[in-house]
Image (cartoon, rainbow, N blue to C red; front, side, top):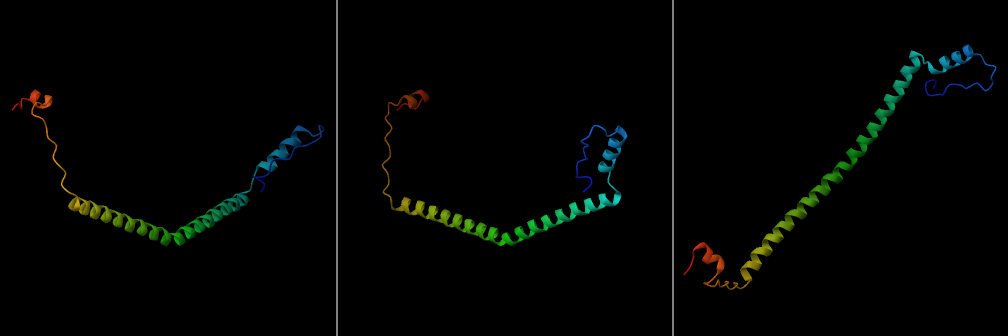
Length: 115
């Protein structure tokens, strides 16, 4: 906690410069054991958060796979329905009359297809 705490600020003007320096050095230094505990706390908290995230993902994975399968089945049913509708409508529809292209068509005469 020494590294996280701000240095003490003297409120009197009578404090000497050396006293201020010693207060700043004491508050800003940390022992090797304190640094090790700080790193241990950070690593444990990261492991716990990672484990919780992994557990949530592991529990939700069957739902994700199930939803994916529902979308695949819906896509296959939609494609089969569209294919069947196009075949049935094409088979039952009366043949459309062909359009008559006049003999004096400008496009045909410009290409040299005059009759």
